[in-house]
Length: 365
Image (tube, rainbow, N blue to C red; front, side):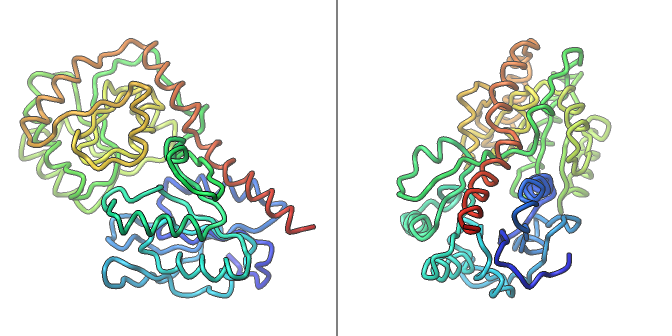
């Protein structure tokens, strides 16, 4: 993109990373706001643990060097002038981002709007210090964008709170095929050590004789892909475990989930919950996992938890739920409708666009 020295009528997102599944969100938000401002995304080329890479084909993206600091803190280098002078700024709701603190303090003093976007609290480090830090960020911000209605309802703050449902699909893309033979098990997510995919592959191999018609379909990519493929082959599962790589096309996803009886998340539940449920597929998660707020979708009866403490427990769970969740098509349609009406891409974009339009129109007068 060509840099523009006039950032007065611009909206900047400064976030740690922009994975491929966020591309459609930013493209559509940019289109929604095109007649009133420029949308700029400042981000790193990859996450600090190098597990997530940003989409470098996204229009409006500018890469910053992100410096890793002691105790898990990090700092985005550059663009301080543009960040300070832009009309509206959205920054990560992450207390470990030093930029977030600097931006919140300085722009509050200058009476410029700064929003925070993320989870209401830490998923893995919900200590007293972490909770205080999140409360301080809430206080310094102009508004807070959260992923679920439940997070918004439980948040005690005087700031404006917006539900931007964590979604990657349009409601119209959430199709439930009535004619498919539903035999497979689907995993969707990164292929990293923290996801316990080696345990899933071994558990599936132990269940394979009892569920002879099922294949394990793995959507996603990561540093463990080759090792996981070797593990599958060593267990004689090379023809029953499919590695499809990253898939963002909704038609391809719909086809894959149309073949699925159940989905599974051996690590933790997040976007994989909404994706499976939007296609009418129930998902099984680790009872003891540190799940993201999307676990609240349990209320729509498409999320089940089980003991994945060891391979044998996971294998038993796979066999049990494979039989129990052989749902009729109408039950799948109800699940898809309930989830996709709330967790769809249009609602996510509109949450930001509506607030930004209101604030930018005020600035013009």
